[in-house]
Image (cartoon, rainbow over all chains, first blue to last red; front, side, top):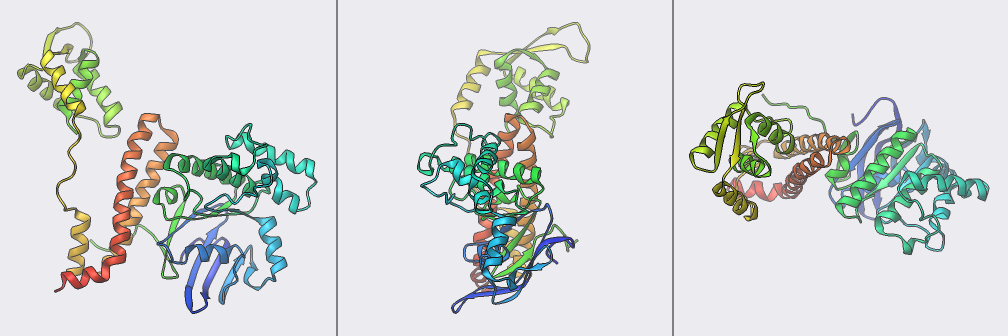
Length: 232
Length: 174
């Protein structure tokens, strides 16, 4: 058992190979609604691949991925795309902002893609700037932002559509310790305020310590880490 | 922690009573693990004997000890030297972590499971420290940071060791 019984999102015996190379070898993971879960593991262990499967970016070769009772692994790409846009938010190691757009346009993008009108979408986007300490940066393009600022804009973009689940893959991996810590504080505050479930892939224990629970991925399988002493 | 020199340093800031020294020490340098008052007075007694502080006459007021302690020139010089010296780096290549892993491998026990357990305990402690950092004063954050970086160093060692367990087992079972 690797999670709560009231799972919002769940992977069951997920297997996925890239060509001849196995990435996931029967991974099980369940995340409760409102939980912040850290997924740790060495490089190449399959932790990012697991996140991509749970988020409907990759489709496993076998096994099941469930979100809110629905089989994500059985959805066709348009349906998964809609799910990602409407119910999920994403933060990656490098903000991956669209360089041609301003910071506020980047934040508004998921809302615009979801059919919102430009005015209300931009107004909603602007509301995130003071919350994330980004006042005055609304009109800047990504090249005019520091790494920490760009990552906070990426966080605002991920949260703007009030997703049910935030998937973060090494969200502080490109930042120095202090900036990374600030980004994590903001991320945790934002998901807690919105009741968002968060799945955070990280190799940093400092980041995992911000989560409610952590699991370890090793050789494509998930190990739940619990403080249960078996010895005397 | 060098208690005598820390108390001396606090006395360089201003002369003080034993109880006030203990309070400042606990607040700044040892939150959650207070110094025993008896240790404070015995330390002050030794510092006085060695000429690093002088003890004033008892002052009127509440409390068992109202003597004021004042740092001497000799004491101030010692603080000055101490503050400019680097802290000694760890010289002994031994830790309980290391011992447990090697012994577990020698005895054919599950060292990997132990490392996982240790990792969980470390991350759990880091979670407590993260909460201290979130709610505490800057001085609490700095102290928590120091502990967290040390735990992170252990965790890096655990990661590397976990990856080398097979080779290490062969070596210690020869």
